[in-house]
Image (cartoon, rainbow over all chains, first blue to last red; front, side, top):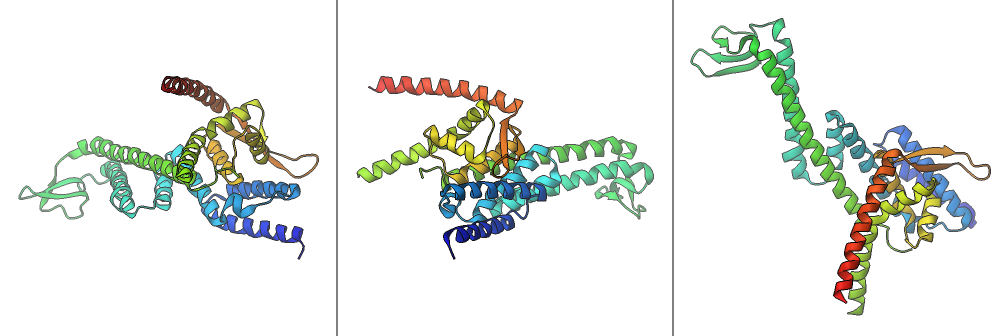
Length: 202
Length: 116
């Protein structure tokens, strides 16, 4: 095999592994990145300056930089909870942060959504939906209660604005904290990348 | 001993480069749009030794942050290139970074002057 053929094969192998590593990135962005890198490597090859492993490291590791950047960066810009959560869980390397911070925040946001839904559905079944107290005065339940014989609903229609407000507040607060965690994680990834690779002199 | 000192200086130099590469990239793109390898050549011609693998994650981030826009151009000779150009937001941020850089540089020069 001559050098040119070997170099072409090396580029193709690198790009194949790079594309696989970009798996979680949206297809259009993935194609764009691979096309750009292909163009770069071809030009380096034409100049006789191709040093793949020296300049880019392993294709999987290189792809990981884009995956975290793309998913977390895009999720932060858009600020949508359903995009933030998977991006954060995919990027976070510290299990304790995921278990004790990100997942509880996700649960809090789900509870917020549930509260909003309870508030909105109250007019549909006012005697079965709301905040309930048992006959002995203890907490009876929150949400839908089918058998309300031994308890009574406390808030009445006041619960509609109250539940909607509290639910939205919970979702908003949870999302703000999750955004802050995501920004911190992205900053950590960028610092790690800078420290671990490639600004040194050739 | 000399080697340890040199490696500490190299580590410090790396940190300085790390903190200023974005400014250099934005400044070069402000003078004219460029594609990745062309930008690398321009950075290296300025004396900033930057490896190939560093530039694309940075450009990707700048695009996500809407500081640069991109456009594929089919060259008359050779293959297509993805050109990066500064957006309005990128220009405003660059102006702020240049002011901050000059202030910082002046403060450091002042401190160095006092140490002599």
